[in-house]
Length: 93
Length: 166
Image 1 (cartoon, chains in turn brown, green):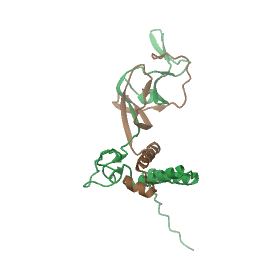
Image 2 (tube, rainbow over the protein chains, first blue to last red):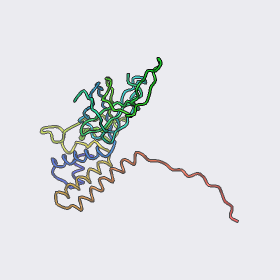
Image 3 (cartoon, chains in turn green, yellow):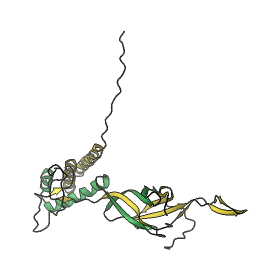
Image 4 (cartoon, rainbow over the protein chains, first blue to last red):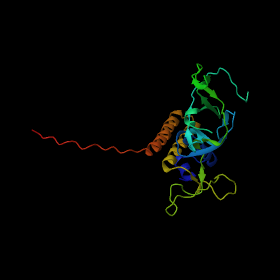
């Protein structure tokens, strides 16, 4: 469907505003459905805990770590709460 | 060498970051009469920062940004194959694309959902909150229809035995 057709159906006649609203709607669609899945890979660095979520990623579906032994990526579990910490021996702190 | 990564690696989302941990079971090794014996450690499992480096070791799968506006209709086949889409900007000054020939890169059902979204925003600007809420409901309804369309299932009932009428 063209932008013009969407504008006519919705009764909106300001094209700049309509284009911005369409972008917002696309963001909402992207956050609510898995229409377009992307895959990003990054190096795991020894002693580094924090890795940035890719800037063009709406929502994370799963994370997998490469198993050298099987030579395939295996999905890993997610912690929902902060771990109880006795001692942080992090190389970063 | 990373092995059994599904068992020993754990992640947590913290803001715009992923916190990656490696789990160790907290056991320790005692030597007794020349034998190494693995004994449980009372403190239990331990989370460590990654203990090894893995090249291209982490794969993130997620919903990605897509090209919002494209040059041709994404729902029509191009000579029997999927159309190759190029991203365009309908508002680029002096560009060859405008509202008339720029397509929104979603299915027709989602295009209709976008129409509802625009109607909702128009009502919002006019202060008509009840109408806005109605169209937002329609918007989300079409989104959920679009999702459930991907998971259509057919149910078949087993044939029942004939019963004699006495």
